[in-house]
Length: 303
Image (cartoon, rainbow, N blue to C red; front, side):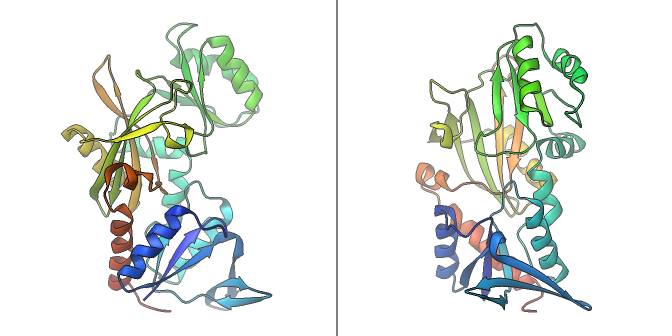
């Protein structure tokens, strides 16, 4: 059984190697399908997927695809849409990947399903600077209350900024000059919980604590992770988020407000990293591989 692992670039990450190993263990033939080397060809009623091999283009034959795309670009959606047109079973469809990669769209989706998220406000366009002050005032309790500003796309904590004052928030939004979210900060801001859900089952969870010099808890920002048993409410939120996301593989980030004693889903990720394996000792890649194989077996077979 041929299972393509769809990645943004040719470089093979640790996560790619792990899911590839587990697919091989399950008797599959995994192969990388980098977006930057892929081609979609339309001939009459046919949609073909090809990949550059040397100086030529070779047709890609696969029984299923495991997505490792995260905040994907527009060209990624074309590739995934082509797979869907070919009836190739995929672990995430193009629309759900796009929504997951946009913090405003994903926040709207969570709200539609009644999942608690931080108080958020966003301008649809960043071209009118006059709209920035009332946006800040809408979320900020006092002129000196810290706020979180996030660009609509970005992962691993990139594009997320803690702003200490009203003046600083306005200046920051004017400086970045692109659509962003302004959120009420949850305390403590440097602790969150990451939950991995595969095929609507919770497979692993960890708590992340930010470095003393950084408010972000992401492991890529020098945060530290520890094995963590989630509460019943956190488990319910993670499963509801996974269902709302439409993703078969999803990382759900939850923060608990220590004052209100309330859990909030901060965001969800269509391409969760696998550092959680080292922290928990759980073989998460095996669960991802099994899910991709399950879809391939239930799907349409080779095209």
